[in-house]
Length: 372
Length: 106
Image (cartoon, rainbow over all chains, first blue to last red; front, side, top):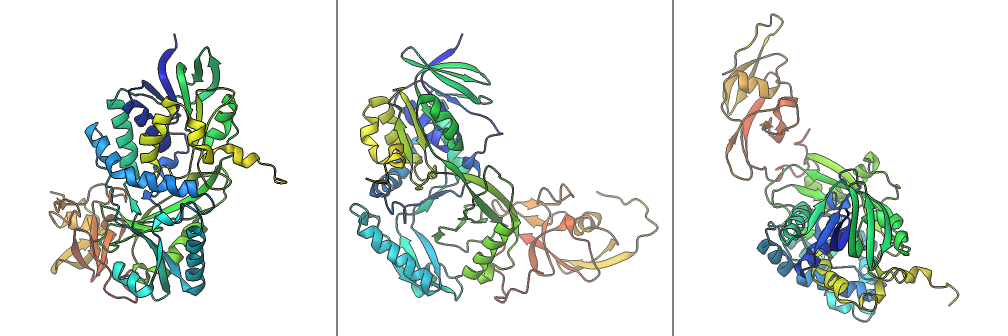
């Protein structure tokens, strides 16, 4: 006999776990169906930024949504602690995106002006600062650094602790986690859904597909077209050091344990998570231009992971019109948006009006006739 | 604590640990040389400051991190001991390299 719950969440990564935690907070009975360790798991390979600046160029709703999640984050972190979550090492003390040379500086400045001219985006308080001011915040920058864009809203967490905390808190609130449960098919079943997995059959009233790249294949089972693709990023981890990076950067953060993580690379590589040494060399080469003094610091680990990327880089949220009660949730910022997913998006799944609330993030935007 | 097996091909290698002259066998890793010389701990941890000694001896556990000839955080089990090497305890996490030109990590 199939086990039944109010909501099934397909996917146990940061997006699925955040939604499941939010649903469980609202009192829903939740089952998380997770593929297992063969999954691509962007949630275990990402950089850990809670990042605001620069997001929403072209879609002011995304700037607002990102800012909302950032504003919710401290309460979100505290709330998980009350439910058996762990300390996620949240720090929201501002962040920098460094510029190398004059062209880079003027391009970044132009992007800020462009975003300020879009209604609703000016709130993100991003501004340019000169090299001397950057040096006061990050004393180890090299002579090629021409300045930076700064936002007081940027921050970071330990992303692995975030994932663990979400799972612990969701389960303490009664959510059930099933691993080794790759979803094979989803079908309407009376008023709800029947989900067939490698771990058996599960029934639910509602269904949330939050399976990262796999939404591309799973969402059509509920009548949705979600055109996400993999975007590969690499991360380099140094040996532990005394605190040398007092300010967070978009491509470099020093963790609470002292390692420095370098990242922010993009690559079209299909579904391949192997390491590309040429990409590592490119990242390391740029880091040495930003911080010449780190030239001989030892890199002790590297990996790659696949971001979940929409054609325009923005989230895709939608309730199916042909299978109401089934939702598809996709984004590449599973860390930044975790607070909004848990405390805002999840209640909307239970309370109705989802497609009105998240109209800006509908996949319909990819289907508009170009001749309009 | 450790006793060497006889090795007729080994020749003595002279190095220092915290300034003290020690003798190892040729072919020893720095970590093996320290254990063979009865050194109790070779680093303190960055998090708690407690003492650690080499453990896995095969490059995996990073317990043998040590300063060799002024370069911090080397894996002692992966570096062969040489005559004249100056080895020091790794005390917590290192700071920035002192030479801004970056000649220290070779």
